[in-house]
Amino acid sequence: MTFHVRRNKSLALFSVGFIVLLIVYREVKREYVISNLESRLAALEPRRPGRYVLEMMDKQAANFIDFDDNTILLYNRVPKTGSTSFAGIAYELCYKNKYHVLHVNITKNSHLLSVRDQLSFIHNISEWTERRPALYHGHFYFMDLKKLGLSDGVPVYINIIRNPLDRLLSYYYFMRYGDNFRPQVKRRRMGSDMTFDECVEQGQKDCDPVNLWLQIPFFCGHSYRCRQPGSRWALDMAKYNLINHYLLVGITEELGDFIAMLEVILPRFFHGAMELYLSGERSHLRQTNKKESPSEGSIKKIQESTIWKMEQEFYEFASIQFHFQKRLLFQAVDSLEPGENISDRKSYLLSDGKLYVPKEVQIHYEKVRPR
Image 1 (cartoon, rainbow, N blue to C red):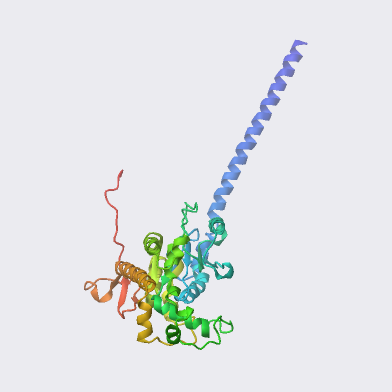
Image 2: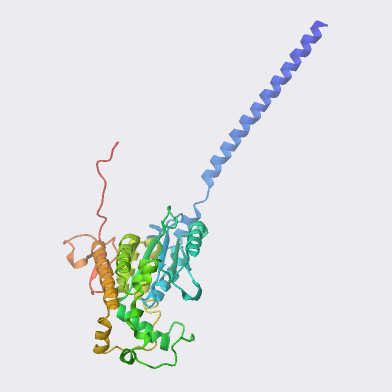
C-alpha cells in the first residue's frame, strides 16, 4: 500500500516536472524563433520611405531634406508688398521639397484675430502634425506665440515690407483697376478714374496719409495701441518684434535677394527658389493693371505727415537690418582670396549686379570635455 502511494507521488512529481520543462523549452524556443525572425527581417527591411523618395530627387536636395522635420514657418504677409509672388514660389516648391503650404483666410479680410481665434490657430498648428513641415501665410497681425502658451517648437516668422508711399500708390490704383492675377474680380473703386495727384489735391480719403499706417501694425501685433496711427509706442514695438521674433524680413525692392537668403538659410523649404524666381514664371506674378507716378507736389504733401515719417522710419530700420544680415551671409566673388575654392558653393546674382556666394560656416567647437 505504502509502495503504491510513493510510486504515485513519484509519477505525479515527474509529470509536473516534465510539464514545467516542456513549457520552459517552448518559451525558450519561441523567444529564439522571434529573435531570429526579427534579425532576418531587419536584414531585409526596406530603406526609409523618405530616403527612397530622396533618391528620386536631385542629389543636392537629398543633403538637406529631413522627412522627420517639424518646422513651421509663419508668413503674416503685408498687402501689396509682393506677397502673392513670394507665396506663388512657396506653392511651386512645396511639391519638390516635400512640405505643406496653408493659407490662413480670415473672415471679411480682417487682419485682427480675437484671443479665442488666436488660441484656436495656435492649437491647430501645434496639433496638426500631418501637415508638417509647413508654411502658413495670410494677412494677419503678429501674434506673440509664447504669450499664447506655445512653448515648444515655436514657429519661425518671416515677412516682406515695402517703401510705404510705393505701397500706398500700388494699393490706390489696385482698388481702381485690379491686377493681372485675378482680372475678373471687381474692386471697390472700379469705375473711378481719379488719379492719385487729384486725390491728394482734393483731400480725398483714399490718399489720406492715415492709409499708410499698415506695416507698423502688422509687426506691432494685437494691442489696441498698434492701430493708433502715429503711435510711437506702436513703432517701437514693431521694431522690437522685427528684431526679436522674425528670422528674416526682406524688402520688396530687393525681393530676389530675400529669396536668395532664404534658399541659403532654409534650404529645407526654399531649395531651388532663386532659379524659379529668375526664370520669370513667379517673379512678377501679380501686377496692377494701371499705375501713374505721383507729382513732386503730391509726394511732398504726403511726406509732411507724421504717419509717413514713422512708417518710413520703420521701413528704413527694416532695410538696414536686412542689409546687415545679407552682408553676414554672403561674400562677393570678386572679394575672394586668389585660389579660394568655391566649386562646392552655389553663386547668386544679387540686386547690385554682383555675384555672391554664401560664406563658409564661421563656427567650430574646441576644448570639448570630457574627452
